[in-house]
Image (cartoon, rainbow, N blue to C red):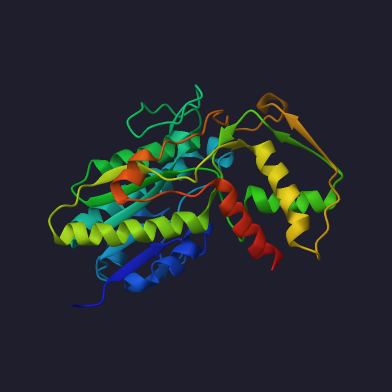
Length: 300
């Protein structure tokens, strides 16, 4: 059998970086960054991707600047809403499997129970609207696809909440962090490792004629607030790193209204992952395990 080719769009991002590692056992992994594939120019994707012919396309590229999307929604929509549809059409034409990532921001953040895949979507900011548009345009194609909604992504590289807290904690004695938004911090490594498992199983299902395109929720187990995550970072860091001391000694819990942002954030970002665990035989780890792993990487 010919060696499979797997394209990763956005290989320099948090999830893309981990995908380049996690997908290696499945075949030849080709990273395509923005210089090669620009999702802001959806019409150019066909001419570039179809001649190269991938067996799997994993789209880890996206517009992720949530606040900036409020004033630049048209551009965010091209990247998050239109380009995924083009990728799905390419997958349909070439027989590839498309894996695409979405977000808890497709929901309105009401209530306090974890959102299920079948719950009604009602995004409350531009970023959420653009990501929901991407989901819907993919689902409307005849491609084989998997859409994975996740939340609160962080890693040992890139720009994310955990790294920001470590930087601010080293600079300041007091910090104020939002405590009324609840979700599951999810490491990019977990997302990539689970994706590799799903791709492997999906390849087998396609060969057996048993594959069904589906949307799943993928986060770590458990829940906390941004304040709770910050507290966990500051509690664990001194035990893992002797080189980078923290100055922070006071961590104040505040409400979202005390920290206004251009984009309204959902208060309830919990995602129910029962469907994914049942379908693929997984038990997802608690969020604290991923945090420990990332902090250990940063300390090392």
